[in-house]
Amino acid sequence: MATVLAYTSPALGHLFPMVPLLLELRDRGHDVHVRTLASAVDDVRALGLAAQPVDPRIAQIVHPDWEATNPRAALQVAVRTFGGRAALDGPDLTAAVAEVRPDVVVVDINAWGASLAAEAWGGPWVCFSPYTPPISSAGTPPFGPGLAPLPGLRGRLRDGVVRPIVMGAAERVMRPTMNALRRGYGQSPLRTADEFFGRAPMIVTTAEPLEYPHPDWAGRVHLVGALPWEPPAPTPAWVEAIEGPVALVTTSSEYQADEQLVRTAFAALADQPWTVVATMPAGVGDVGPLPANARLVDFVPHSALLDRAVVAVTHGGMGATQKALARGIPVCVVPFGRDQLEVAARVVHAEAGTSLAVKKLSPVALRGAVRAAVGCVEGARRVAEGFRRAGGAPAAADVVEGLVNRAPSSPTA
Image 1 (cartoon, helix red, strand yellow):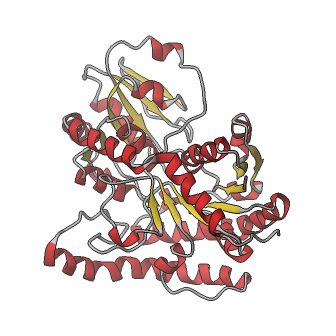
Image 2 (tube, helix red, strand yellow):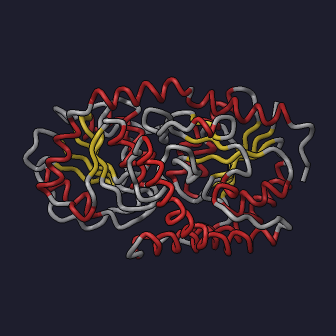
Image 3 (cartoon, helix red, strand yellow):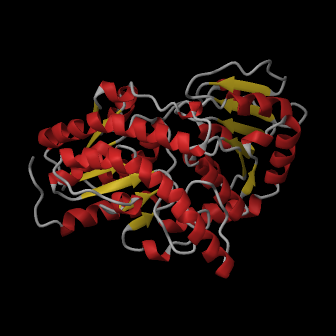
């Protein structure tokens, strides 16, 4: 039996996909300890896992990317946010390691300081990413702008020109912050994002055919398929009372000013033969009057609605998008930022749904995009089968156990 320490960034959208892995490890007899946001500690403990909150100051550093006016500004905001948190989550993980004395550590990809602390610890550790990481790969467009793969010579030429522009800009923003943090741990400087994200094996919660092929990732990046999870909760009576099909509308669990999606969806789908349910876990905002067929909530278990859904209209968060696709339900993605342009491009590439740019978002345009998405059931079902073939939580747990089995001995502090 091994002692496992898992550390998450302060976002439910990062904790929830990790839970199936942690439960699989628990069921295999391992002693699992979790450090996560304070509001989720009781839910994690109820699962039979040892849980403590991360340093409360970490969650106070919000990610205000909605204030950015262009992709470079959004990247600067992200680096400032994750870098600011890193000054806290690194020491926080170091203290947790001293207390728990783990055999292996699992670190959220967005907990930059914790990953540096895990590296400095010297024992086996793995990065956990609930979204496609920005690691370069042959035949794949550079991460960020949501470009579709382009085969052949034209694609190689395009990607060869675009990659240094996109990733070079990202690395110039990231490098000073990351290397300053690394110096604090006595670690050598890094030049590229690939070097930073390639310091440890990585578990990623997606798989082909939603994800592009990455044969050069084999052995270091493990695609395990979607790991959908939500806290156990009874199905509300109003959900049980819904007659007919549902259209689920989701927004981000970490606020990004995406109220516009809910407002437009209600207007676009008011005349459709569906009950339109919108969830706003980051806080219910002002979305205007609700049509007769609409319902607005901060949270309801998505599984209860997806049992009845014919389509999901999502902001492009990987968790919400893959929850629908894992059930073979097509999606219409309206990406607002972060990794969401990449998610939208993959949905279209897999023929599992449609995408609509925020700048084109209107009731008429969204209605057409949603109707087109409803016709993508076959592609959504192919994605669901791909997720199943990837192995899910058991495959992820195999990666963690493999690290323990290969380690000669783990540091104790």
